[in-house]
Image 1 (cartoon, rainbow, N blue to C red):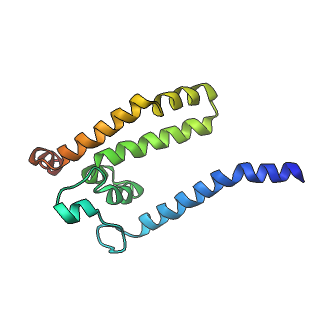
Image 2 (cartoon, rainbow, N blue to C red):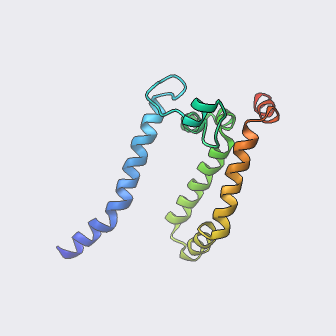
Length: 140
């Protein structure tokens, strides 16, 4: 009985994460953030008309769930890259290779990595609002 409780406790967090992801993915699969008004809109864009690094992420997620990769890239290329990195990390975690998991955790959660990620987000936010970026996206 005690072992069963321990097993249930160890499975609770992954199961809750999986159910949460499936629920959110289901909402984004069946409802289009471009058309449905109940999705959260960006307060920065509403106030300034400038897009932040996250603008377009909801539409990109919807497009990815429908396997419209180019459309997803047009909405938010940074989100698409992050999405595939997360998928790769999940596959690595499922593989059970503890050596690689520790190595990637050391790289991904280091202080330098956090600083680099913040710089990338800032630069992407600035670049996303340029005419040059909009021209690239329109020509895809």
